[in-house]
Length: 224
Picture 1 (spheres, rainbow, N blue to C red):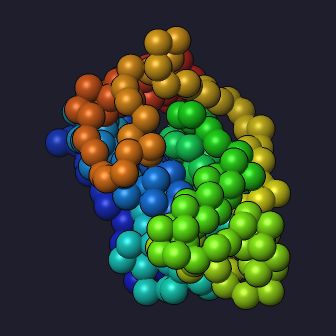
Picture 2: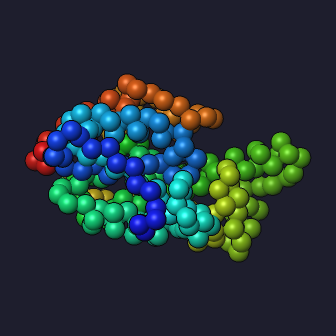
């Protein structure tokens, strides 16, 4: 992560007990969940934890074009952010963020609804096929994947390189420890799957639940 890239930080009133690095979902899912993640960061600050939400290379305020990024570059960038933080770090990832969090040297990991790369890629490709159909163009999943093998492909407003698409299609969530993996819904964390909405949303209750669960996990690990 270069010094030119933005990192949103919300700090507690006093010295932080630890730092929580938020790794958002990837691509459009990040936009749909950002407002709720910021609310969660404020709730974490109320628990005495500093919360960071970095822009990945090619995302948001980053000066790097997204087409130059891939999952490897994102993993390296996150690891560098963690290396620059003093004190213990809990990495908290959502959805596809769990595909790029394992290279960080953290004291603990927390994951919400982790998603595999192949599933995310299929969703992006299907959205492109639907958009093409509405525009009067015929495309197929197989045809798009063949095109993506040799040239950048526009998926849900994101111009992705062949390297990014190839890595995403093969990426799986990697084991880390200590880890708390949390589902969303009746048997897990209270909240709504904001990443499925057509537009960015906000769920204040979910944000509070995220912060409370991360804080409780940090205490159980002896971090705070």
